[in-house]
Length: 274
Ligand code: SF4
Image 1 (cartoon, rainbow, N blue to C red):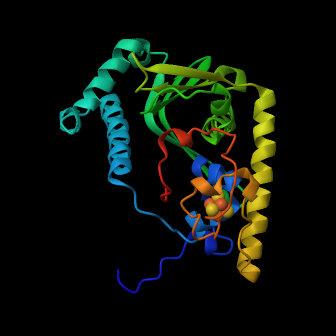
Image 2: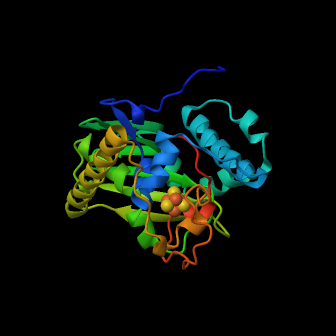
């Protein structure tokens, strides 16, 4: 509505703030990018190619959700021949994923939350399969297998989703696994299964609390003195790949290319609010 001031909940003192894996990723990458994205709600337009990729990815998730619910999928399949190709490839490659029995509970787009202080951690699982002695988190990625599994282990989606499931269920870490399915891999979808341990769980808790502590400090300073969130060190080379490079005045920096490779590098989805 014209003239309406939209206030980010990140700017309301003592508001309960939602934290997703995307918040954690961006906060860890660059606090200033977090400020622009979630406090200032700055967004940049996507290219038609990016829009098309993002839409196809969303359609595939919707397709798998509707299929899991037993709802009609034909209207979704009609949107692109690629969707049916991907779905058939998944059904043929991993038929066990789609079988169920009386001992199994399963739900797609399953939401879990956990409140810590003023923060509400939120995870949306593409598919969660629970059995008496194990729990499997399944995530669909509509791009090819990444080069490094190590970065998947360290990705905040992996870490937060595993952490939340342990904290909100009776399953110990060793009974939980996270499997990414990379639908576009050739010649068939490929998976990466990540197991979990108590040691990793404790480390994630430590890292989460440290990040929350930093965020609280940045928010307090921003609200009290309008102090901007810190920028990432220019030497990381991240600015040259960031949508906010002009806003930060870092276009001219002669920085090296980043030596890290994250899951987001694969599909280059621009910053958008969750
Ligand atoms: S340009 Fe650099 S400092 Fe600015 S938001 Fe992006 S990564 Fe952070």
